[in-house]
Image (cartoon, rainbow, N blue to C red):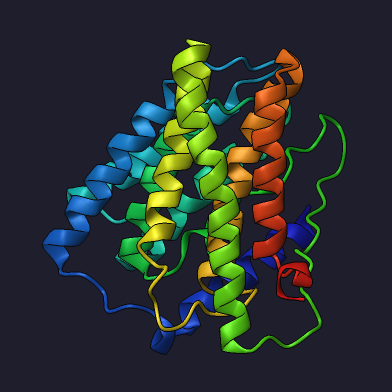
Amino acid sequence: MDAVIEKRTTKARAHKAATPEKAPAPAVSKVQTLFAQAGDFLVKASGTDEDHTFSGESDRLLSIGAGIALDAAQGKLSNSTPENTAYDVAACINAARLVPEDSESVDRTIYIDNAAKCLEAITGTAVHRMIFTDVPRPVRGSALTLEPAPVAGKQFTEEQLKELYWQAYLYADCARKVLFHYASDAASDEVFAFRDLLDKYLSRAEARLDADTVGTLIDGDLPEISADLCKVLSLLDPYATEKDDGVLHGVVYQLRSAKRIADGDLGVLE
């Protein structure tokens, strides 16, 4: 665990050192507004009805993060700068997502995602570089290990990277259309929530389709859409399995294909 903590600390410091790559910091009044919004979202996240099987400590951790954000909205920073304070809030979210045998509902995921976007605006650091999005919860009593995400060894041209992004979006958009049509027939609150969550992420992805560049497989638009798809899959896949729902299994397959492409599957380019 010490090694993991050191790894995360080193990574966070590395992000802070990369000042030239970050967006300009927003004005102080805007920062306080963003902290207030993040705090409100985390208050709601900490209060969702969860099916925890053990401690429920994730609720408390999210509540602590909310308190830090709301204090910062009043000018009471927990750390030396607004940026570092935002990282403190992010750390609470990450800790909440590592509590063994706690759960995270669709509603909680949506609230956390909204809070994370506020933190992104404060720090200028992409959400997937601050917040755990695809790390499985450890089993109670076992050691936590974080495996690095696989990185393709092949060097992609800018055109290939843009094609990967476009194809990933197309697969995910197909899944979205299926969910939109299926939600009304399914008459399920969970399916409506999955539909809305995927729609939120893909609306954000759609706004970047005409960008001149999409970054690389480890930094930029591709890992961001991959992280968003991973969050949807982590919730939708077990639900589809539990309900043994053929339509939802198909949606899961489409989203897995989209994520595989965003992670660098060359098949669509050959």
